[in-house]
Length: 255
Image (cartoon, rainbow, N blue to C red):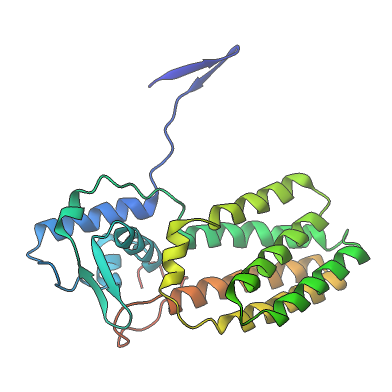
């Protein structure tokens, strides 16, 4: 074990853990290498790999996105994933960004607590700012980029309303991890139907209702449910397997 000396403090030099989706992605590569799959052949479904490795389909979904970025596989909506480039089995390209569903889970836990913290201390000016953002979001639902900007503004304005700079910095960091993330972009490239923005707007309104009431637990639950809806919807809409496979429930790790 290596050690570093920082000032008068001795610390262990522990490497950052490998992204779990990368571990699954590398395992899928090994399975492909052992198989007789040729370029153009269809890969087993996410469900098959989830059962093989004993992990959730969200983790396999992230691994597939990684393999798509590495150009090992090609995904076809409603059909599945196909081997695209055998040479990519030994690719030196390393996708190390946080997985989109891992990020959403972290946001769900942290931002629901932030909403609860904001409720007792939120000001009239904060509430008006949030209403103004919702008005913009409602007007820009058909413009994806502007709707996404309003989405970010809404969440970060709640963090700002806590009057706690650490919470604001944490929330901002989570959103920065999403923006520019190739994993997140590839996930959204699979999604053509953007009508889910209507659901996000309704969810935001429910959060604001609880903040107006200064109901901490109500705000927590409303934010938690909003981000649960985001997870479920994005997972469903980004599915590329043939439609005869049933949906995914986050509560069932091997389904």
